[in-house]
Length: 445
Image (tube, rainbow, N blue to C red):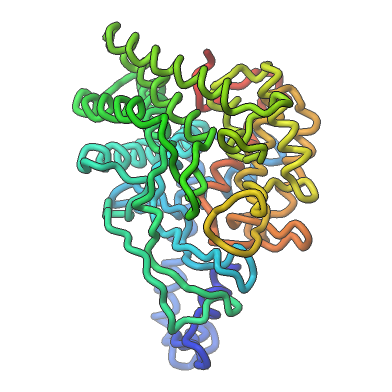
């Protein structure tokens, strides 16, 4: 609903909508009967296609099955068929704060979505879509010398950001942007996201492309070279570069998954070299990323919490039973939430280069569900997940954020990463309750 409302609100200032209303195909005398029959047939074919496509998936017999199916449909709808690219969202500039400036263009494909996208699609039996998205990731890796965090759906690399000053935006929010300047940022989680997705794909398909291996070697070596440097972090802050803990963890992921892939290729020398890098990063994070409580913090030397650290048990940086992991998850659950909904970080503690507030992040809130399951808090995780599912729109879709005080969806809509996190969270809870154990997107050991 939000996307359609936004489309009618983003008009020229002081003018009426440039889109004339469509004629009522039932009652309008301008629509001839044979045209109506063609339209009805097209609707029937469309309905049949989506039902048939959904029947290919594997969905558990559970009361939450409908949420998984709707998320699968949303992800399919956000996929650009010619390349397999998965859009972050189908809209631009829907505000994260009403009348605020945190308005971004999300009509692009983020590389960091790859791990959870592949895991979610494979888990639901949607292998064709997973393979297509992996092919898109592989293509951009092979075709570009300097890998970016995001691309256009056709693999475009220039995503220059512009402000459309003649548009008022949704409910008067300004600016309205097209393009996204974050494409040129330094974000060190990129290398780990790619290596993790390649490892997941290889483990699932039992095959690693020879033509991709030189690219992976370059990526792991790049992570090994630059992990000590500050970056913009997973949240693409537009303030000062910092030593974000989650970025260091993702550099560890790059080295760890790289050494696993090298071992699969029986390349013991390369595997040992990257294992040494992974060990060095791991030790550095455990030394510099903790506060006096034994809780991992947003960046080195800070006491601020950050929701991205909920990924630590999911990525197997440390075992879920480790007291530092448990302390971090519970600290975020108790201290980085508003009415139980997770914030990315507290804006008053983080220089992100912007003004104003933002809503609770739904993706992070679903991450909390998964992390709670990981540390054994299954009852709390189920209650938390059940509450999150109650916030779904009438179409069972989610935006990027939620206003904790009203339950209103904020930001671009529908948001792919929210639905990917939903799949992960729901499957965590279902499998934990079934007592079948859990195999997440990361290696078990």
